[in-house]
Length: 205
Image (tube, rainbow, N blue to C red; front, side, top):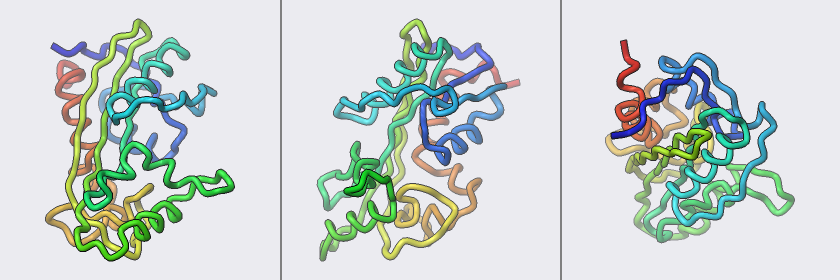
């Protein structure tokens, strides 16, 4: 049985403001106070694992031990079938331009160029979540959503690769959807449903 989260404070182990807002929206009913790794000045650990789950655990444990508070980390990315699963765990690194600036417009163009004339445009967003406590205990969950890549990018409501990803059964990208609609079906939402069921269920009044 998963450990039940009994604390009122949580560190979101990210320096990405968009991701932090999305996580706060999803866990708002269960947490009184959120901090981000950026706000606390916590360093970003090097992601040395070879899976989404491994990197999420690494980041959550680092933030929990550095802050002395429970921490939640996610590692998520875009897995493109025709590219053998890339960019995968390197989704953020694909956005790093030669000058070191992170630009997801650049990343989406890299994906488009890598696909070339490939007919298969199927892809999946994958999200692994890890909830860690300062004592080293970790609970991990994973979610995914299947879809198709469409170019050029469209929509301004999401972040990352959202402007090129159309989830199965829909005709618009994640970036064209209202946040509440995206949250209901996204890879992160799927992982969060498992997290809530496992670690927060007893807190639901």
